[in-house]
Image 1 (cartoon, helix red, strand yellow):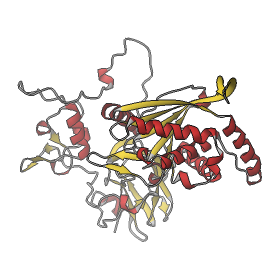
Image 2 (cartoon, one colour):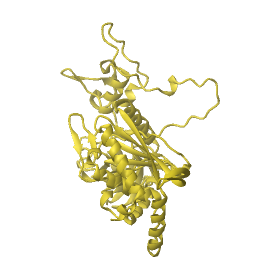
Image 3 (tube, helix red, strand yellow):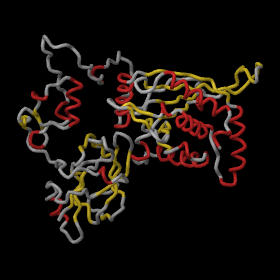
Length: 427
């Protein structure tokens, strides 16, 4: 019996993705573990593996297709001994097996739902309400809410008249009732809304990752009351310790970066000031028992934050080795969801670009992020006398709903003390 290969859910929040590239073609024989495609999610580009053996009878979704809903049949696999032509003909049917026939390297609980729609949509029909409820995908509902569109006026092209994202293209907001207050947020700007003033330009379509970065950062600045606290930190003793540690670690081919030591310092500071190792969750404050540090990495597809789990209890050599591996995977788009989802606080370092000081945007649901600038020679008071020292500015951004200013100031004080007396990092 033909096996329908469905678009998987590669993260808990994924509703759709882009089928970036097919690595197989119709007629190819695949075995379990073979890489079949690359799928771009809202977080990363991930490889998609076969779990069954057979022949690719039909590819239903062309590579480069955006907005492919989770559960959509993207290809059909003919089992051994099965007629490939017959399997291709019957590929429009829903998969008989509720389990998806291919996988990415993600936790089992993130597999695509069994009730996912078929890619062959029925003829468009008016969205049929169930009682007073209009049938629409979660993504379509969110877009309609953001744009002020009345779903009752939309014709659904999905299964059973279900309204999907494509049905909202070109739809205009419903006219507001005269007596209703104008409380809805403004719709996101689109290319059509943005004048070009006759200036020559090239338009580059946003990938899913860049869209999510834009949405999350906008939400963070709109919904999180940020408070910023800056300290100047003397680095000379830290740099000396780093040099000594690297000489000792040279036989192991491990070379610590300044960032590795700062990850450790932030983690230890969070454990010493637990009031800052928290997140705001609406009607509760979540207090974490370990410090998982998300580290900002610039990847070709956009910013991503791989996580050093339990950084406070790890040696600096272990942090360094893990960070190099995660940064490489981030730049290659190979991070798995558990490697970038979570974290109790973040670290962003732009010192390598010569940036002296900056304010970073909090990465929700976290409640703080540390922005680190370049270490530079500055006049500085050392042992009560004016001298020249290597000084770095570090700015903490705190969610004021979860962290009071005094607690944030205490965290910055402890971080400064750990960096300036760095033997505490190896104790």
